[in-house]
Image 1: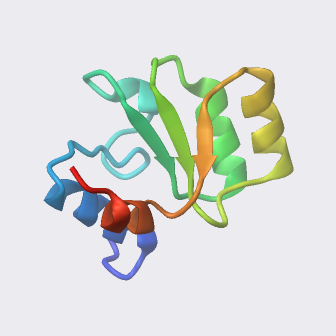
Image 2: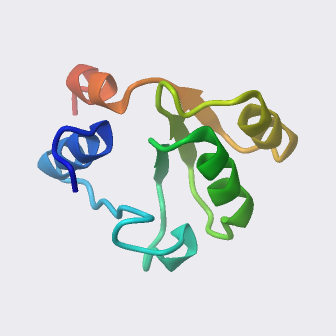
Length: 100
C-alpha cells in the first residue's frame, strides 16, 4: 500500500489501536470475503466504487464511516433507502478523539 494515501494511514492507525483491518480491493476482492463479523466499514475510495461495494455487500455490519471525498448523493440515497447506518467523518480524527 502507498503509505502517503489516507487509506494506508487509516489502516495503520486502526491496527495500532488494536483493530483487525482488511483492505478490500487490495487484500480481498470483495467485502463478502472478510472471514469474520464486521463492525465498521470505512469507505476511503471513489464514491462510484463505494456505491458498488455497498450494493454488493451481503455481510452484516454495525456502521459505515464515509471518509471526506468518498460520499456522493447516489451513495447517501442508497444507504438511506436501505436504512443502513452511516456517519460522515475522518476516522483518523475520530481515533485521536476516542478514549477507551
